[in-house]
Length: 306
Image 1 (cartoon, one colour):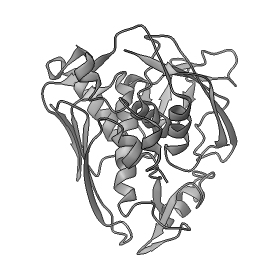
Image 2 (cartoon, one colour):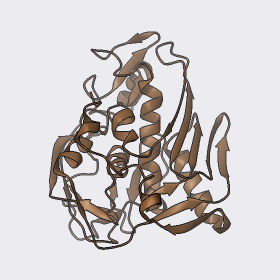
Image 3 (cartoon, rainbow, N blue to C red):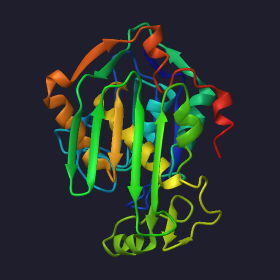
């Protein structure tokens, strides 16, 4: 059964790249609406942008979507992960600027709001995308693939020269609230050298030690350090879940990422939907629905969130 948020959830913060204040309202939506963003500051052009893989502009630093009128919204991945991880299938998201507020750099603020308010169940069947054949994309040392599995599973590995991060690998089955308990509070991370370079290019102006984990060699500059010893790879998994939700429905399959990022996950979805034999629609009965990321999420799952 499809769901939507029970009431309006509102958030305010700054955009990661512009540093400008942004207000966000996640509103209930009817069945088959999907996840759609609406730029409330746009006049004279279509302000609606469905959060679909075909609308994604491939960029390395975040996920940005664009409609046919050239209206865009960027850094949607943390919110999309929260929607997927709490089982929200339909929502109208009003935002008064070109970026989603970065908040604390994770999905946790969104997750807390959605779980606390609860969901409204809609009288409409839910479909998922079942992976039937492996699909893979890659470039250099980076690779991403989708292969058959009975639930959404994510297997991710990263390798950074900075000793504070180094090599990390993690595998999770995202069924039954795992995202809320294990991933949602993991923050975006970057190297101090990358921060300096982005600032020089006029990017990441809203980034700070309060909304990202910044490392420099073997040192973690953000006060309090990591929330998890392997927070960087957990955040990469969070990003992957959010980017995969632009498929337009939950995925039943195993995602494997090696040094993969936003652009590569979108390339993977494009490769998947270009190969019609690699996937099929399935109606979610009770057994299938029980294996989806948002099924059974409760207030008790929030106890594990920092």
